[in-house]
Amino acid sequence: MQRYFSPEKETASREQVIEWQNKGLVDAVKRVWDNVPYYRAKMEEKGVTPDDIKGIEDLHKLPFLTKDDLREAYPYGLMARPLEDCVRIQSTSGTTGRRVVAFYTMNDIHLWEECCARALVAAGATKEDVVHVSYGYGLFTGGPGLNGGSHMLGSLTLPMSSGNTDRQIQFMTDLKSTVLCCTPSYAAYLAESIHERGLRDKIHLKAGIFGAEAWTEEMRHDIEQALGIKAYDIYGLTEISGPGVSFECEAQTGMHINEDFFIAEVINPKTGEVLPDGEKGELVFTSFAKEAFPLIRYRTKDICILSREKCSCGRTFVKMTKPLGRSDDMLIVKGVNVFPSQIETVLLNHGYAANYQIIVDRQKNSDTIEVRVEMTPEMFSDELSKVTAKEKELVSGLKSMLGIYANVKLVAPKSITRSEGKAVRVIDKRNLYKG
Amino acid sequence: MILMIPDTVIQNPAYEVKGNDMTTKQISVFLENKPGTLAEFCKVLQKNNIDMRALCVADAMDFGIARVIVDDVYETVTVLKDEGYICQITKVLTVEMKDEPGALSDILAILGDKGINLEYTYAFLTRQRDKAYLVIKVADNKAAANLLEAHGVKVICQDELEKIFGD
Ligand SMILES: [Zn+2]
Image (cartoon, rainbow over all chains, first blue to last red; front, side):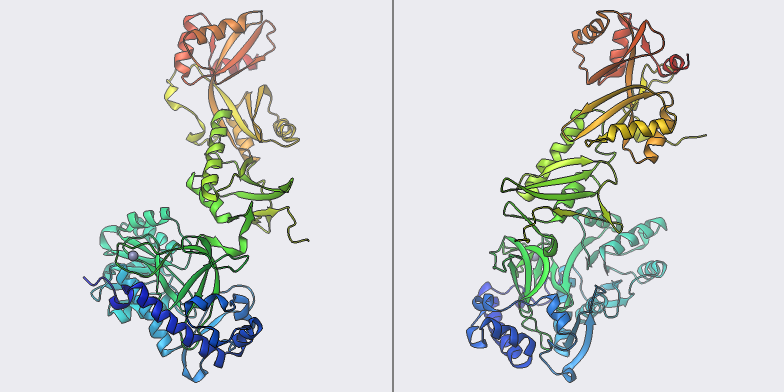
């Protein structure tokens, strides 16, 4: 069975990958300098010219790009090729403010589809498979990306798009879909619907590629059990290309980043300093191989960890964890980075609902962190010692997740401040930015 | 009226022997540790015409647990849940105690001699002036009840308790 879609790339030596990245970066910086006045101005502001960039060791000299830059330069301001060379536009799903649009030449489309083809092969797909794509089609990159990857692989592609569950299940049974591509929540919903209809024996799925939203290991386990498949994660963003920027392999312990197209860095989100592999920080991409819309040092706001440990699948590309949080809600307490999502994970792991609030304060020049947790029936007992024991378990769970001591305070149900229906997760009383 | 009480609120169903259940039902309620929560809790009961026959509050650093004995356990639980309280029904032992010196230590000695550990205990009075009642929480209700009865201590079941309150 085919193990890699692009074996000479996916299993290349580290030296080879660095050589590609050095060459690609130097070239991309030149192209951007010549064709993207917006980024050139940023470089000039930092006093950097293309001559300063000899390879990836010089990457840190270059200015960052953020989503705000993309909005400011909307719609054409970051294009490195004339419109007539472009064949496609994709756009990010509705966030507030201006949408972000990305442009693709034919080569850019092929690059993206190759990423998706690699993800499919890593999930065990071959040209004999029937790939059932239930991601949305349109401006959203999910549907078009996996659809293109499946074509490139030569699999029979079902462009189902999302919704209409009955039709999804009918095609799945009648046309014997073997690989399902959709969001993890839709996969869970489909699994439930299949069981409700008593059709578990009529489906032929063997694998699923689920991305575009956060999911947990428990969800993976549930979906795998319910559908009798292996479930793989996939990561991507429209700004960089779309799904397939990184993808999971058979090891299911992180997503390989397609390093022949993208350079990944992890930075301290507050200082911008580049962090060594293995440290947690904000993921930054340089899409040096893109023609129409190459982005240099684009900050994803996703917090993750990169690992260069040897992978059992044989791929040499660096692996990233699934996003562990967003840099926008990061707190620094006692010098340690704390993400609300980490606290959520601890609560969920202990079997409690994630109704919490983090209160950070400073007493006698030392930071304090208190996690208020709404009492649940699962945590309650008539015996004080049993409740305090559960409280202590949470404290030690938080300690091992965060690396610092956080006080836990159990509060009454529904007592946590809600603002327009949404719970206020963080209250920082330190006034760090008031001078 | 049929009140729906989820099974999960009834602790230790293993100790329930049909027709021979020696336990009484206590309601345990989570109280946040901030000023006024106990007063507010009492007000909720009052507003709904619920008489507290006994109340005992245990305090940890940041929260408390109120344990109450009432006439109608299920109605009270429904009221409390509607008001957003976390509560549960706990099976405890209630024993009759002569209102005289030494009565309490006698009972505790019977349990202590057999190594039965008390999770908590509290007493309450009724209109019958010469009698006091002791609520006892132990791990094994049945074993403790049998032991106490064997020593001539009267263990009150839920039906009897309701009759006492009715008098
Ligand atoms: Zn791998």
